[in-house]
Length: 163
Image 1: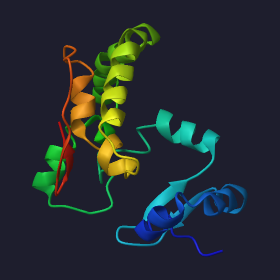
Image 2: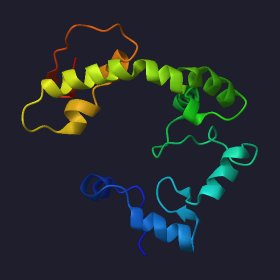
Image 3: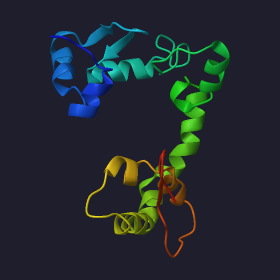
Image 4: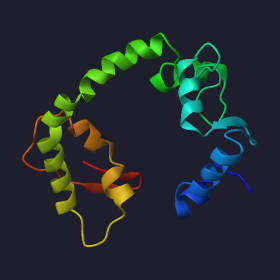
């Protein structure tokens, strides 16, 4: 089977390559994926858990979790993001962020999230590109912690809708 887990056209046309991932889990669960840069595709849950628990062997910081390599100066900035950190710094930052995602904290936001969604959907026509017109606007995430406003106006720009 031809394996290409990073083909952007594939994701756009057909979504995630589920059949490739299933084949890898069965036949080659820790697969070297050729490309620039190449990377290890770890496809079974128990292997992912092992990798996640052994940062002394598997590092997120050395080469980052990005496909496009960049100069060391830019990598240093990228290492400030939790995704590209190893314990203990990743663990410390995760414990700070996790407080905002407890069931109680999320439950307190439920009505506010519903109101934001209602506002966005009310402003759409009968047809819309959900990703660019509803899901992508960063304003929706920003609004989760903002005080409730009476209404929102969505405008469209070349980079997508803004509030």
